[in-house]
Image (cartoon, rainbow, N blue to C red; front, top):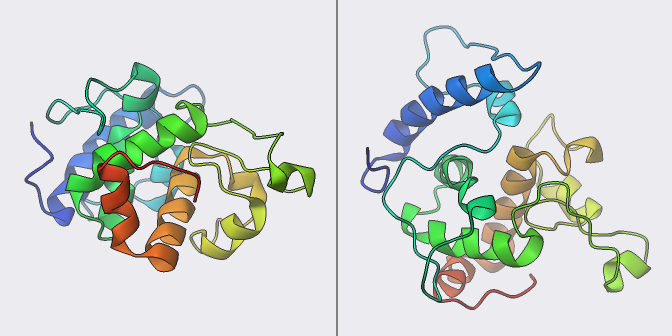
Length: 181
């Protein structure tokens, strides 16, 4: 199955299947189904973890493959990108940013930069600080206890990037210009 050519609605329906599988296999997790809907519920997406990429072969913007610890987030990133109406062609750039920021570790915490020295370390897959996370998080998930949850971290980060820098930042990431943001 190739997700590349799917519309956001089709992507959400495909992701619903992936979410159902991922959630069902996660220890102690359970999906909260939404009646008569092909799209996954927010609760199910929040619980979605890493999964095997189902789309075309992904290539890092600088060439080669992504490490497995990064590529495992491609399905979830694609889903969040569709929510933000970020074209699917920018997936390699977002994954490259995840690789640079956290090496694909969802609980990563930066304890050495200027933000950390001020008491607000960046956290999660896309290394967002708490004030930025709270401002750009999805309604109902603004508390910082969600900051390192993969779905909510990706959601807040992509929301921040799109609203602050516009689509040009995603193009920059796709061209291999991955730097802190």
